[in-house]
Length: 142
Image (cartoon, rainbow, N blue to C red):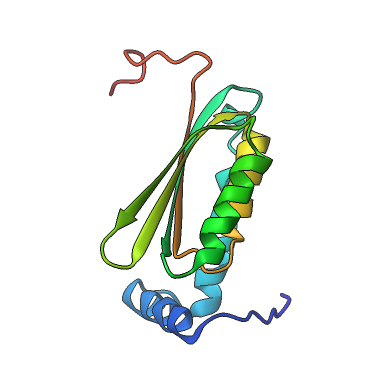
């Protein structure tokens, strides 16, 4: 197995080590392997391929980090055919939330989410994707 060196803030590494201890992992390598498999598998759902999708992406960042807000604006314009709507809100005393509503295919949405995740100083990035090409809410009830 290859050994990989990764740079990250000390606080994040401490949280990962704590997570590993609390959840019974043998160490941080096991956490990173699982996280990598999960990340790569997120957009490999064949049920979503070749379908019209709607995605919701939320980004949280410190309002004093203007580079994140600028990056969100550039991504919104760069992907204007994908971004159906965009909402900016202040959260608490020091944070902003950017919400994107996306309409497109899996490849375009995954590219957009990847660019958001790669944005330096974004604190959290959450998203969900649902197919809308043949949406039948009654058929999807459990």
